[in-house]
Length: 557
Image (cartoon, rainbow, N blue to C red; front, side):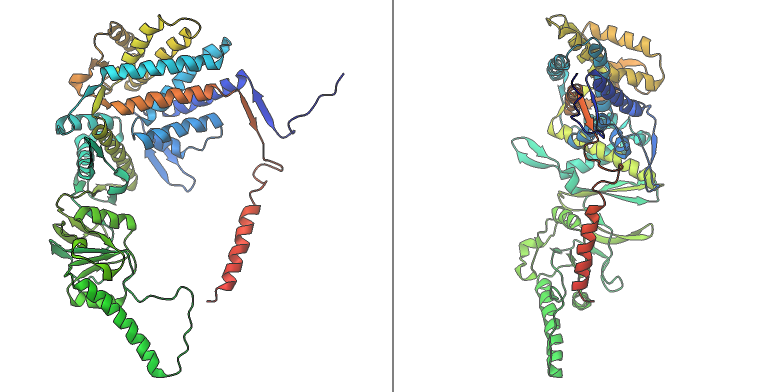
């Protein structure tokens, strides 16, 4: 007999075949079960403790999964899904996971029957194409400028979130903010950059009702010399700099040997002259407010005070960009290159207010601002964080609609319509792919089913009634009202979803399910030589620390 050949090292674990697929499916279902209860208006909140002892209370699918530390590789890729969804369209993070989990769940039966995974994947991809086609058919275009529809839409997206009790408030904030920063690219396209030009400032205290969208920007800074500089200027002329208003120091330590005492005075004089010149160049333009991203020396501060100019220093670059967008100024790198066109005159009011125990500078009432700040007030930090997350979702939804003004029904109606259409179509599919195709059709019902479960109605009855209504195929708008669990027409209830959120959800979920099904081998334990956690980790930091130590010796104090 031949001796057994060892190919892999002892430390390696290898699982292959259907065992792996079962394990992946179990893991994905476990992830889906974690956030299944956070779908819909009657959703539960999850409380997560992170490593440093902070708490996150949320029901945003992505926020929950982001905090989880998962061991299983398949579960990790499920978590990636909701991240992608969040970055791409901002909403539907929970549905993506629930749907993908369900797709894998229905595939399990076929793997038991020894179907080949590629067959299942082929059927799923066919189902995906048809599902998107059905979406196209039932989507209905809307007018972006009609505020009522927009409000309804954003509201239905937030109704599943914690802030639904303040319904209109968040929706209003989101729509205001996104309409302010929208830029027309021509050809009827609108670009809305949420990340760059909408800043969310959370200030604990006050009530949620005090939250507002400022027609301009605010930032957490006070003027440099509070007693002498004006703190309230109407129609200010604003100059934005990103250079320091102080004497340039040498890069590293520079030594100058002076023989005569007078030379020392000349040196000091030169520094003063230099700063005076800088300030004179700025004051020539008669600004009321000078904002710089870098430092501002006492002397410069004195000169500016003398001319009645308020100054703010060390502002974040992003904030500076926002101010530039809001009041129409241009950020200047060198004071000697200032021009009249660089001065921002679009702002209506600059003032410094004290909110809570910090000073905030406001530049508001801008004419046609292209950046804005959303000021959130609320009772506690956790509450504010949750409100901010919901606001992000709401703004993403508003942005999606501005980009693709199309709607599909919410409340599980879309999924049921797709499901019914796929079931009808499955009878015309020949060969072995028919069964997985039909199963994919059934899997879409996971969303309305979960909605019904979270409302606490009789799931089987409700689902049967819904399937009956959709099977005839005449009314695509019948779904579940997530608050009461009653079967109703989504058009009347104004429960909508954005078309591209739904399309993205379907695509992401099915593609991920296919990817996980195709894995048939997991080899683990590749790098570990010694006990887990040792290995190469300690060597790296050591190298760095030595280098750091060397650097420290070179630089004298």
